[in-house]
Structure formats: C-alpha cells, structure tokens
Length: 258
Image: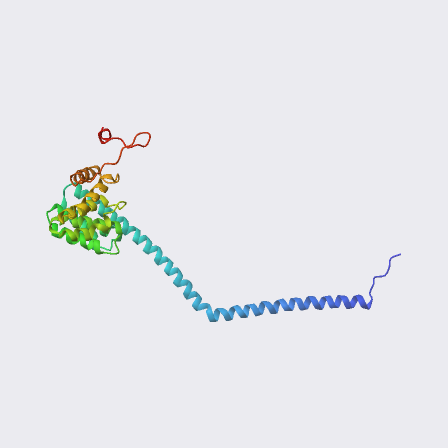
C-alpha cells in the first residue's frame, strides 16, 4: 500500500525559503552586473579619451621607431657602399673621384663612416703632397671626442708623422708618449718617433732602451724591429733576447746568432 506524499508545513516552508534564496541570488547577480556596467561606463567617460590618446600615441611612436630604424639601416648601407666605392677609386689611382666620395661622406652625419672618410681624405692629401691639409684633417679627427679612441690615436700618429721634421722634439714626445708603451696598438710606430725625438734632444739613455723594447716586441712589424735593433746596438743597448739551451742556460752570443 503506497504512502501518501509528505506535505507537512515544515517541508513547504523549506521549499519557499529555497525559492526566496534563489530569487535573491539572481537579483544580487543582476545588481552586481548593473553596478559593474555603471562603473565601466563611468571609467570610460572619465578615462576613455585619455586612454585612447595614449594608445594612438603609442602606436604612432612604435610606427615612427620602425620607420626610423629602417631609414637608419638604409643610410648605413648607403654610406658603406659609398665608402667602398671610394676605396675602389683609390685602388684605381683615381684620387679626385675618391676625394669627392669621401668628402660627401665626411660632410654627412654618417657617424661610423665619417671619421674613416676624413682619414682617407687626409691620406689623399698626403698623396698629393699637401701635408698641411692632411695634418689639419688628422688633428680634427684626433680632437673629436665622439670618434672612437683607436681612430683618434691613428690620427694623432699620422699627424705627427706628417710633420715630424718640423715639430719640436718635446712636442713629439708629449703627443706620442702615451702610445709609446708596450701593449699599445701603436707602440712600434709611436715608440720609434719618440725614441728619435729623444735622440734629437741628446737623451740617448732614454732612446736606447726604447729602441730595444721595440726590437723585442713580437707584435711590431719585422722591418721596424730590425731598425730598432740596429739603433739600439749603436746606442750600446742589447736588443737581442737571450737564447737558452734545453737546461734554461743562456747560450753564448755567437751560438745565439747561428
């Protein structure tokens, strides 16, 4: 025999409470959504235009950077090509054509190629026996702090070499002594000129050891080392490295020469 369904007052109250809770939950969600929508609309009214402006400016800046980067790359390629063409003209002996190309590069904001172009112009001036014009360019490059130091040092060495005979010996020493030290890329060339300046000042005690140091430096060209060795010998300074046997003992000078 089936039991009659329960329909007690307690169970009816529970169902009604559950319905009210569900309705309240739906209502709160609708209110929450409405509040969020109102907040978003208020935020957009207040900050929408400034944010849009920031986004537009950001995109414009990014686009500008892309264009600038592409433009700079194109310029670098153009300047490099012009420099190579100038070198080709020098190799072909067409100095006037090379000069016009390097002058154009030196006059532009070529950055990486401007200083090398100036040095090439100075070299062309020397080829045309215009030492005064060459020295002027070399000194400009040497004094330009925006130019990499190796190029400034090269310009200094070339400038002094171009007018060595006209300079006071002390001026030669003052300009080149920082480079006339072992380990410096220009030690051989700069050291030789400093040592010669010492000789002009009758400072044989300083010239001899410097010639000997140049002669012993394997990073220096063979021709320069040979000259330095001979001059050191004339000044009474030993410029030949000791040769040792298998026991580490120094060999006699005669054996060392064999």
